[in-house]
Length: 133
Image 1 (cartoon, one colour):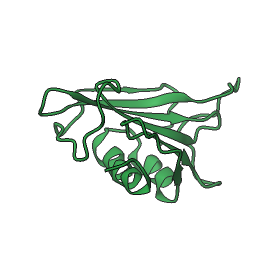
Image 2 (cartoon, rainbow, N blue to C red):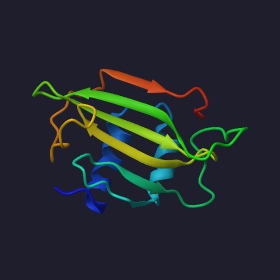
Image 3 (tube, helix red, strand yellow):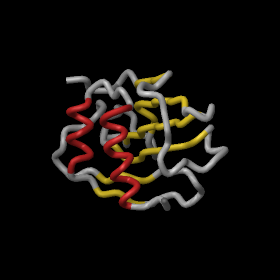
Image 4 (cartoon, rainbow, N blue to C red):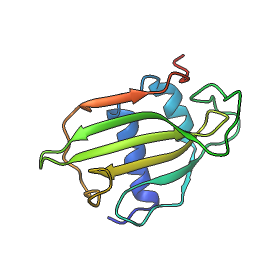
């Protein structure tokens, strides 16, 4: 399945249900009415996210804003065929979700249409500035 709006909806549900994000209600709030764009065509399933104004942020705003965004949560899964699926969430300086990156084996392979992954990620990482409440 080509990367696009329907694929982003699939990943939206996957991220909320499977990636062990430590504040799922806050993430769900960001994704509920978000708009998705900039669908990568390289074989990964990455896409940009635009969150509506007024939605509670995922992280504290940065005191020294940068000119970009940074990773706030990653989840790595083992697939039954021995490869890995990696999901990374990125936030902008104001703390809103801005990008979802989905790769297979560090983008060495196209992401399968229906990735057969283990139930839980084998590894996660979360930024310290994440808002948990």
